[in-house]
Structure formats: structure tokens, C-alpha cells
Image (cartoon, rainbow, N blue to C red; front, side):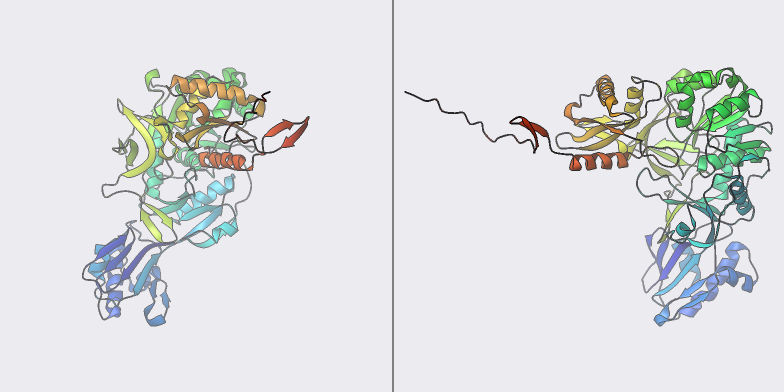
Length: 545
């Protein structure tokens, strides 16, 4: 995986041209730059033996059409990523066009919700071997900017995981995690052991976890939320149960009643299954001691009902991104009702603030520093370490309130609509378990139109439209013809259950393009032809005698 490119050419001064591609001083003799680089690398890493240093580094020499490729650097063991001044200061005079790239390899693991998958992850962590998750071996060969040494296909097995693994806090590259893709193409995020370890420690601390935890992990290990649960349970010496059929409410209830599990991790979509039929859990809810909720927003009412369903549990909700996991925590079981609409506050060394346009900014040890593509590494944070997210929010008494994605914000005739908030109001007017999602679509008059998609029978569209109209009126908005309702067999979602609003908008646009002509009745028979209004109305002339 190329994560630093350093290109030297004749230039009066060093100039940064991208986060990890630099221009430095030029000169006449390129060989002078090799030894200083090796010496500096040894100083930076603490490696003294020249042979060992050269075996870690890789120098690519593209001078005059020649190519020499010596084995030189997977990654810098102290985890720092070095910039223009570092290289221009140590490399001396180098000919124009001389290119060095520091590279490191990663091991691919095929995603599989299995015990072997989890143990393989822990094994690579212990070996300090960077890893990346893939859907199959073919994808492993196509990852941009990543050099895969091997691809591991874990065995399929579910059940209890009882092994213990300590928290690792080394500032070294640990894994490349890809974002869910709600904003478009997934981005490769380089996470360090410190990113993962600090997050694990905060989970344990906020949830007050002990070795007595026996958790029903309702989220697949292939998701960052799920794997984080296995890291936390393993670190405290507890036990984690991987359900063979995924989240199963009946199995959960049975294991709670039998005393086999006392903790649960789940996303709101799964918890809504329980809320739609509280009798599934019943009195067994009193046996739960810990719960973590994440990945999706929840309404204050839903949080109250979950708290009532599991009255003795310490229930914690988190907010975060792939780039900054668990940046805030809300202890639902202790929070006052007025704060249940929030996603909590930052803890430990983490910080949260808002930009001038209301976007959430995050800083702390949990924040990744770089993303990866075919061109190398690119900074995610600014000079002060702040990550600028695309999430909107507001702060109230130190608690962060999530107001949706900036890209998803609907501007309907100058009136701003946050899809998540509108969805909550519509759901409150529908039967429990209704699956709906809101997205913006183009509207010639108002700029943005409002699309409400529902999963289910098309006969429900009018009921959903009435609920949406009432919800918008409650928000002081009259959308009129800019409000659309579309029925689908299922809502398009990412692997973590997040609705893909852009896909909804695309599906709506496709339906408009391919819609059949209006059906008219003409001369006693049906004729399909477009409905067109005449440019002017012609009236027959009156006959005069």
C-alpha cells in the first residue's frame, strides 16, 4: 500500500502539492540522497543495522528509463507520517524525476460472520500486521493503493467466543476500513491500533463492563460496530455469543430467560423489531445488564421504550463515523428525558465542536488521520487535528444533537427539511414497524422536492402521503406538488442498515423516465397516448341565419 510519495525535482524551494506528495530541492547527483534517507529512516525507527533498514525500505529509481527496486519500508514503526520538510532536510541533492515511494503491504480477510474471522483479526492485530476486509479474493486484487500479500478465507462457525485479547495502543497502521458508502463510493480509512484501542477503552469505561459480561452480539463481526464489541468483551475477559442466524428475537429472549446472556449490542433497526412486539421479550428484559446501540439515529420515544423494556440495563448509545468511531456517548438509562433526543457528549480526550455552517467537527485519539486511494494517503484532519464531518448538528448544554447529513438536507422553496427529523414525525403517524425513508429529488419550481419511500404494498401510499403532509404542516412546510410517495419492495440500505438516499432519488428519477403514457378513454376504447394540453381553446363558430 503506497502511503507516501516523495518526488524531487529542480525547484527553488520545497512546495507541498498534495497531503502526501511533495516537491523538494533539486540537484545534480541523485546518489547522494539514498544514504541520507536510509540513515534518517534508521534514526526515525530506532533500527541501527543497515541491512535491516534496507530490508524494510523500498527504493524505486526511475532515472533515464531504468528501474531498480530494492526491498525498503512497509510503514514507519512509530506510526508517524513524514512530510516535505523531513525529506528535503535529509535527502540532499537529487536529480529531477527521481521518485521514492514508501510502501507497506496488508493482509486481506474475506468478510464472514464467523468465529474464525474474529480470531484471525485478533491474530493479525497481535502480529502488528495491517489488514483489510474484502468480499472475495477477486476484490483483494483490485483495491486501489493497497498491496495485498495474501487473502485469508476464514472457516464458517458461530457460537461462543471466550478468548481474551489485550487492548493494543501502538501508533501503527492496523487496518483499512471502508466507509458505508451513504455519500457515494466507499472511502478507505487507515486506522491505527491507537484509534481502535482508545475506542475500546472508552466503551469499557462508559458501559462499566466487567468480566461477568456474556453478550449477545446482534451486529455482524464484519461491521466495525460488531468487531468493536468483540474487542471490548475480549479485553475485559467476558464472553461473546455470535448467533448462527443473525439477530433472532426469539433466541435472544430464550437465552435471557435461561441466564445465558446478560448483554446486547444492536442497531435501531433491530431494536424496532422488539418495540413492534414487546411481548417477545416480556419479563426477560429484566435480565439484561448492558446494551450498546449505534450506527443509526433513534427518536427520544424509542429510547424511552427501550429503557422500559430493559429496566435494569446500562444502555449506551454512541455517535461516530468510520473515521472517528464512538466520538460521543449517551447513557440512555441515566439521561434525563430532555436529553434523549441527543447522541450524548464527548468523553475522555475526545472533543466535539461545530463549524460556522453547523457541521460537526471531531478531535481525539479515536480520529483517523488519513484515507487511502491509488494516489497514496490524504490527510483527513486539519493542522490542529480536527476532522470536519459532513454531519449537521447542534449543541445543547454540552450534549450533541445529530441533525442529519449536510448532503441530504432538503431545500424546498427556501425551507430546510432534515430527512431524519421528517422520518421520525411520519413514523409517529403510522403503524409500528413501518419502513419509510425520506430523500430529496429535483423540483423545477422549488429547487428540491421531497420523496417519501415506503417498503410494502402500494395501497399504503395514500396513507403515507397523508402522514407526510401532516408532518410537514407540523414543521410549518407546505410542499404541495413537490411531495412524492414511492412504494418499493425493500428500501436500499448499506451493510450496516443505513438508507441510501441517493439510490432512492435515482430510482425515483428512473420511474419518471420510464413511466407509461397516460391512459385516456377515446371513442369507447382505451388508447395509450401522452396527455397534452392545447395551446389555445378553439370554440366552434355559431351559425347565423
